[in-house]
Length: 163
Image (cartoon, rainbow, N blue to C red; front, side, top):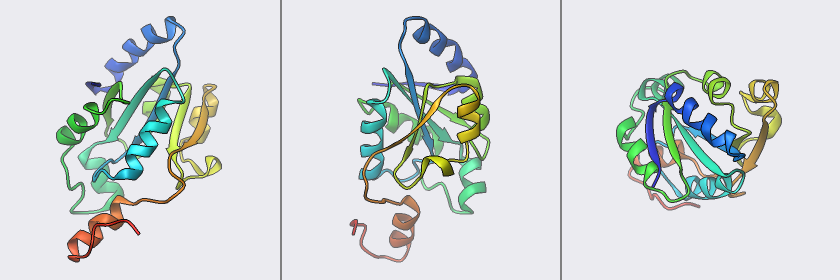
């Protein structure tokens, strides 16, 4: 079971200890607002990229700024608790900014993992990761899964089944 560390600045100290032992850190970030199989597959693949997996969640205000009113559907504390319960996750933290640049500069994971809906060259934090010597890894299921589409289908009363 993962450990929830609300302030990522506090997590940075713990990660230094991990690095001192020669272990590598993989990090993925996102809303994780409505969990679906794409998230599970991303987390499984991201966990294989390092010795330790950190999942960084956008805060409620950050999600609302990125996705609009009515989001998130699930509040931050519940999202953090749920993700920490997954076996592939070592730490869960959150960030209030709309991008993960400051979080990445602070935590400096060796590998920044993004889902297959991204291309490495299009990851918004790419320059930040490369500046400190990290790398981008595209992980997970080749099929695109979308929480936004799932939420829209649910509001319309449609099927929640993936196509």
